[in-house]
Image 1 (cartoon, rainbow, N blue to C red):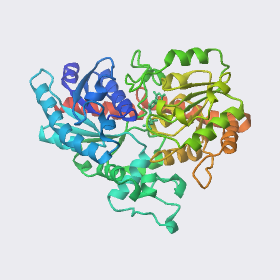
Image 2: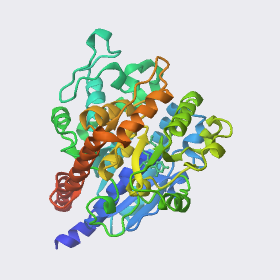
Image 3: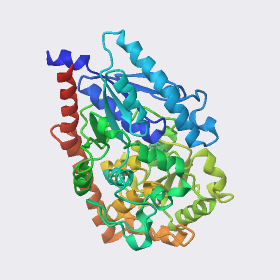
Image 4: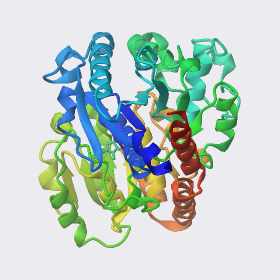
Length: 457
Ligand code: UDP
């Protein structure tokens, strides 16, 4: 009976169509499917073909830019979001109606918190709605307080370091850039705040983090809304192993050069390689790329660097040839495979939230090179709170110079401090596994959600 009811629960998952959002929401869909729920991921026409995961149905909806998505807007975030709202609401409703004619109508929409309008669509169609936040509890905490007027912007110099319930004191360097310079990113700022506009109508609120990782912050956050921590949303093979064969997210907007990377890593000694990636969106200044490039050369380490095609022109002339004995530079890889490889000893990261959770889940120490947005507070937590790496100081131009970078690499790769950092990384890896394993805090929250839905229909 229980099993039959589970199969009648149909959750429609709606990610924002970027790599760092599709990955955790698709992973959540897989978790639900592994618990007997029917899970469908609705995504844009442009991204639908890049997703393929067992037991998950993929359906396309429209953002109004069906050929190339955001790239079609000439980087106009406001236009993209407005178009997504109009076209997405309409096509999501049609999709729900299509499923109403089938034996498994949609029960609940789990929507990316960037799309608060999806909750309205759910309610108009008589469905349950669950918001899913793809950033840390700390970041939710900050923006929710701004939304409610508990934190006024701009933050005055005399109010720094900023003290918010549950959070460590945040100096100017660790504030999200939208908070530090609210005028500079109006469309992003509006989107970050709109996440909370109708949140009190949501039936569930999930955050991709775990209790042990942000325990104090979670206390501060749940004063604001009843959030449930369900992370880390990292493929099961790297954590509890309960979803058979779940070795990758099942979504890649670029083609990973998997074989080239694993062949190259094969001959390398354990923990000897530095893996560098700045994620799917960040674009570094040419000056910063050069400092990283020369720092890697000077440190003498073996390195595997993911540099997206559009960034290659920023490398010093002849650099690839110069470092070919030590370094491999590729346009995209399967990051989890690289982090899990025994040869990888350090992750130089832009501190996107997924990369942050992946480094913690796989126990890989980090050198933080955050560039903007939430990456700045993430770096502070990695460096100071979780103590799994180093955040090198930037100069007055905001550039981390070669010497600082080399120094940080040394701290993470060699000596007593490196051993301490590795011990901490190992501790978080264990705690991440515990959170999603049977009976863990995140697993319990997901089970409560599934059971609740089962009993509602
Ligand atoms: N990623 C990947 N291959 C790469 C670089 C990144 O598969 O070469 C994945 C990575 O595992 C992570 C996501 O892309 O899940 C990036 O998300 P994150 O939040 O770290 O950064 P964003 O791209 O959103 O800035």
